[in-house]
Length: 131
Image 1 (cartoon, rainbow, N blue to C red):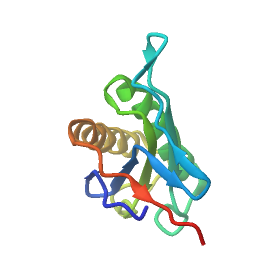
Image 2 (tube, rainbow, N blue to C red):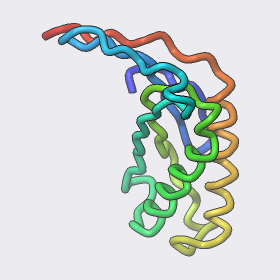
Image 3 (cartoon, rainbow, N blue to C red):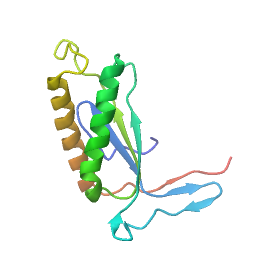
Image 4 (cartoon, one colour):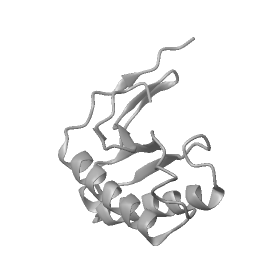
């Protein structure tokens, strides 16, 4: 997450890395289409306990993120994607750990986040130098 985020909302942030220079040599990003199938996407999820205390809430968010990425898969560029919860949802507003209202709010925000991310240009590749 050394790269700036390619999109953010009030509670979530997404980072994208298209190609990485490894210390063992260049790692080429896969082609955009592999045998007519969408390009491979590697997904990382960061839902910290400090922002979502209950495991039920963290699992709900992880499921929502995976489902949303799957819906937007055709528009997302290949490479590494990391979706991160950067701010917790107000417990006063969503007292239940996995309420329908919370699920709807998370869904709407993730749709907005990935719609923005799919429109942005990919960030320049990071370069990891050998130690």
